[in-house]
Image (tube, rainbow, N blue to C red; front, side, top):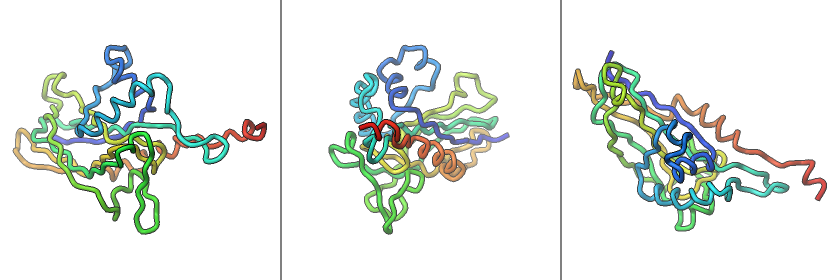
Length: 217
């Protein structure tokens, strides 16, 4: 069986993600994949926020009795080789946009054709996005030693709900690789099969309004 890369997403809450950065030697962090930052701006932004999140601050956005509450999450992309042969020359093709200087603490949204775009709809026709290629480490197949078969988990964005973004946002589009045995090149869209999972997890972050508590105010 040739090399074949599968992509899936995970959206941990901000506090659990921060603990992996601030306390890398903890049992929880050691049992999880080490998150990789393909973009230096995003790495700097999230490391600055990690201390606040780990201390229990800025974990939600919105106002409980008006707009409702939404939890902060991190979009993680996991790439794994589910084939037998090794995948070499692995490249992630993505679109990237940097927010304003204060956007790591203040949400920004993307609009196009009169519609607010969700993360899984980006970039659409919105301006200001650029295409970049991230060269990744080889992904070992089933025929390789266990250490070489470890997936890679990449940090893509900091979000709150489907359409509120913080700081730099990366949206993966395609992953390409070379089969180490046949030397054939392959490519696989990233978002397509994952849209429903992303939509469910991001919409599920919207806690809404605690009606009974608001009525008592």
